Length: 478
RNA sequence: GGCCCCUUCGACUAGCGGUUAGGUCACCACCCUUUCACGGUGGUUGCACGGGUUCGAGUCCCGUAGGGGUCACCA
Image (cartoon, rainbow, N blue to C red; front, side, top):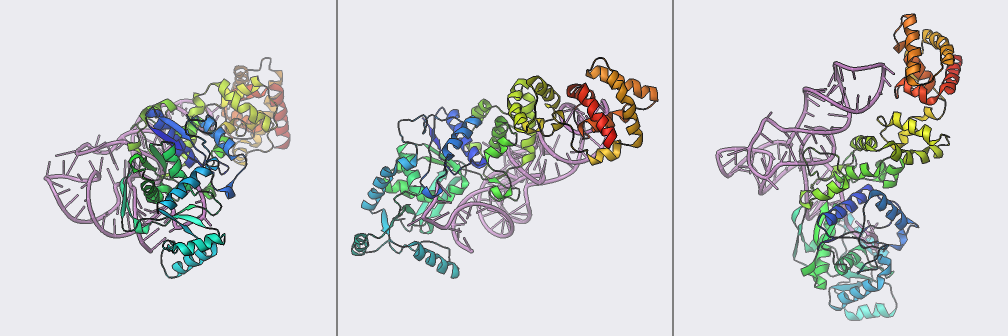
């Protein structure tokens, strides 16, 4: 039975990179018929963000990523929130202190800062100089007695080659002398990621650690910890995922655009599209297929097929994918998503009307927001007119034509697209001009832009009275 | 800078010694068309470089270059 886990630190929003990590852990668990665990890694009190966990939970639900064990559903190995497990970490840190695999370090922050500056100035890599590693018991007792704050550090065995097998990258090794005597317990009594992570993965019987590549270089520390605890036999397998990249190939960051799942959601991206897109950033089970349901992803996910190289998070393909998913939805499903936006924008339209708009826009929309923003002319008269279309289509002649066709619209008995088309084409034929000479200016006058759904359908939906009002206004001011 | 990882079209990828190097997005052209999309057809662009190994290398090995990650009492 495999057990994988998603172990985020609740910092307020969910990064799309985290989404992919969560997704891969989920796909792996479901594919192998294993257990998917959610663990909240909130050991840094200084980064506590109110509501972050709720937001995380909501985002996972939105994405369709489920857990078998975690803070909400509980489980055999709880609690699943690290801040509720501090006694455990203290106990295990003490065990390491007792068996000599860890030691107390009383160096102050200023002291260490100074040390690093000196190392940098000397052109050396910054690294803890292990100054407290071999202090005498007397010196330590003295400090303890005066109540000096201290941290617990890992006593990294020197002169060894730490090798582990990564499921994505194969064999990876590090010289232990290049591994820092990592802080395990902070002076505030909380563990660092490294200690808490290893202790919890062991206690929670995690078999597969699937995480981002940024953790690769600290993995030797974790391996050393498993050994120090005597847990090497049950050490989980590691799989380090390639990073998601900015267009300039650096690690995907907020500075260069949107990275929060919430951002994409609020911009009108469907969860199915984001999930599908992000899952393909790292592998593709097929040579030809691009659109996958969650079930298909689960069925075909193979950790061994995950790429090693980082993937640029490019929006173009996401946009395309989103429009594909929008086309697959039923108008009723879309209504549920579009309706709140209509209200949010302060437009008033009933369901029947919104459905009409959806039917006309579904093939053209790239995001849910397009149904109200790109198609805003369905809800409100144009406040401005597209300059390009105006120059091209709003000729003095066109203005006259619109003025002439207006009364014919007013006379129209029925107002559906066929009737409107009949009026326009009959008029054009009578004048011996092409229908385009009318269609383009009409579109501009009514919608304010040069593109959109078929004109006759558009006029039908907007309605006779409103169309006439907009045309009269256009003739007047344009 | 030390250590570690990576490298197939502009982007995402398929490829697991023998392929005219395939697909998708984007881009270009044409068709359809009142516009924009959709759809259809076709097209441009790629194995970072250099050495090996092999009858044969995108696929294996070594080196070089380039890129990235990491070097906190953050995760």
